[in-house]
Image (cartoon, rainbow, N blue to C red; front, side, top):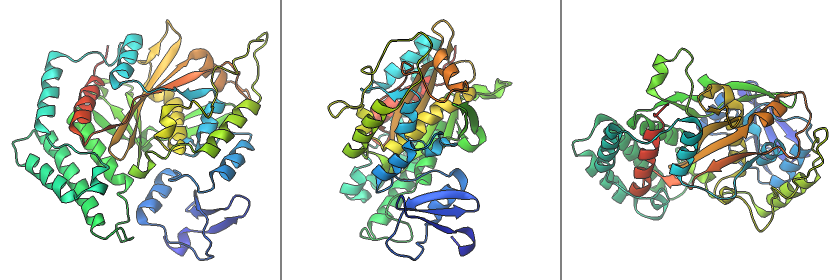
Length: 415
């Protein structure tokens, strides 16, 4: 980054520095040095293109306290945290459910994502049989990566479907890149310590194409929604479409996908953050509907004894951003995911952290959505919408990958 593209603005109140990159604000941890720190090119590119906060600040407590004093939601879901999401009455469920259960929920309520046809079952079996390598992403850091690289290359030597070959080749390149970094002895080098988000982005796209789905650029599906008098813009990393989109006058998506580097897994909400969230939810004043005297203060409460499982698995900034994307991308899903009888909508999505995939599903009713879109300043305390999610599945591990392949193929099934 050149001196022309950055301007340092110290912010002593919150202990952070802000950089202006051609009009885009990027936040990073403050340094004890008064000298500017060079930002790697990949981080600069992501800041320029997506304005996405790439890490939780070291001083989480101060930053979240600052968020609480704002009267408006951030104008972009890239800056949402769990605090903003939950203040709208949108919560992650306490427990994970299976991938099949998430797809079955969609099918039962909308007719989308039905069971595999006989031809699809044949395709699934062929894909599962042709990809044999199996290891966890964490194994790459604990053991000799050359072993796994040879395993993938051996798989490539077989007669593979072209799309299987593309995915396997992308995996080999990812493992090779990690091996190259490991050989530097953990020192900072021109490649950086960790694989970039771009590597996992390309790898995930090759997986999606392998099952005959279409990955689209998130920036081409940027959407807006007015929520509590604030216009909010949302841009996911990837959207997933089926091949049916070419026959549609108004194409729509079947999932929004948030992709993050591997280090965003297992960095959930810490104790101080949970305590702050709990105090905030207890103190925040919600507007009651006329004639409504009921109370649901005990219906959902963040306690030290019970927290959503996903809080322990995923960085809280990622959860806030992804929940916002599921909500604000309502128009991109079209009308296929609506259940008029139950007066609700379902928005499928995925969180991809490295090679770990979590299926997600936002379920919300029409009344809640209408309330968010009206010119209100707060949300009824009884308003609740929920995000269901699966356990993380690593598509480098054969058992997990076989399950994901079957689940992804179901995404093509429409009523």
